[in-house]
Image (spheres, one colour):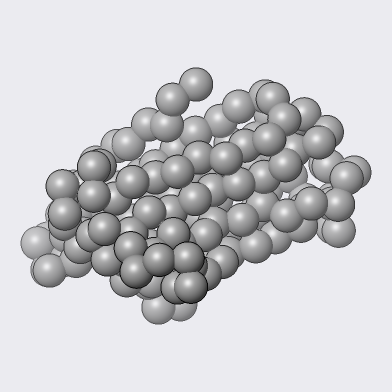
Length: 131
């Protein structure tokens, strides 16, 4: 199943529109790359939040991650979010950054989860265009 991108217009143009990346799958090993350059045509974006839904509490210890794949190279890649849902039997996870994370237009985001238990896993990332 493909990743969907949905534009949510800002009611007041003090800040840019909000965009939603979403995807779900019911197979093992989720790894999705979100190419900001291609999807947002070089616009500057801010990462606001990540939401994860899992159909059943996982029993295998593995982390759901959102990683910045920096345009500057592997030395600058950084894990922005990591959560092991098996530690708390979590089926829903929400992370809202206190300060939105500024992304470079050439960066990519990589969302990954091993999903050994083959649960249905869905995620949603919210990004806002920055001026």
